[in-house]
Image (tube, rainbow, N blue to C red):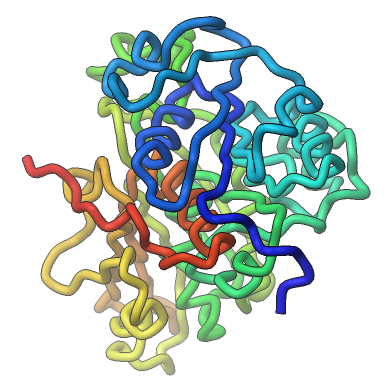
Length: 357
């Protein structure tokens, strides 16, 4: 049983970081959610504006204005707070909500890792509250459903981490992930946030492909942590993210090797068996994942390619995945965690398919 008092239904919810793309996706779902009352919109920009003046698609859904509130000012108005602030900024703000007795879902990377040294290495900053690492439940519902349902403090996964972890989890769980794993993942421009910068602004990337943060991306230790906890051994992830000329979506290609003693049919069926019953994970058999099939939705597509050629006693396996970075890799996944915390059907408001075309 949960050690926490149940959250009320409807639950009073506030969004901190309401003017970013993640905030827009949170509010697109929360404002029509049957178990939620959105009470406050908080940001450092667009103060005093109506929500539809910031996010044009959300017109008519609320009369709330964007406010600049401290955690102390906001706390009396919410039972649960979504915090969509940048890493390094989020840690202290989130801790203030925790200390005020609020349920919190943090969409930054500040509480995902267990090791403060890994945080310092990949986020290039000393964690301001290292004693609190490990006190949040990692919000990947496909792995941590029971823990999320009984939690009040959630560290929601990163977008790349979600896509890569889902692709590789079945193989880690089966004890087949060992040694080096090489990953290339392409991502859309919305992952860089609402404020344009050189190299991330869409007009500058719309007709090009560009690798960035090769082998140093901050999601590397998060992915390694997930896979080691699932059963990977002596794991080392070589990850190269690629800036792609699209707005939404992540497409991942993950390479690893297995010995020839592993049955090919077993490899081909692992993802399907692992995610059996997960309504938001589609394991494909007739095609490979693609972004168009999941963009704008909460669905993840997975597939596996098993190499036919054996080299030096090993066979190459490729695990593929595609997700929407803002929904399955961000706001929608956080709402799935919220549903579990509220005790409602975890898929409430999340089953709409992608648009096509």
